[in-house]
Image 1 (cartoon, helix red, strand yellow):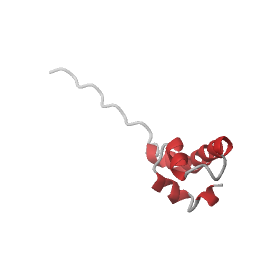
Image 2 (image 1 turned 180 degrees about the vertical axis):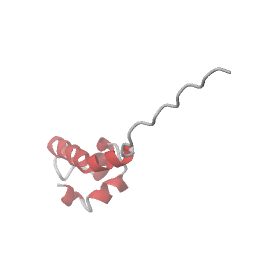
Image 3 (image 1 turned 90 degrees about the vertical axis):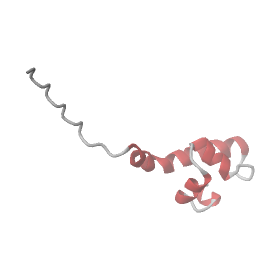
Image 4 (image 1 turned 135 degrees about the vertical axis):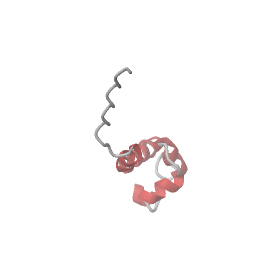
Length: 72
């Protein structure tokens, strides 16, 4: 009978990708908003555009910022 290969040890536990991303999300939203506010102005920028540029849904944006004014 052939000897068994050693079982690989698992890598150290990292926080799940979502939780790492969740911590960075407010900054990503602020960066996207700033870019759009500079390009289009505050009044012409829609929250849907900010969310899309940050790669999240409009609902996710509102989890972090209750209004467009708060985002500003």
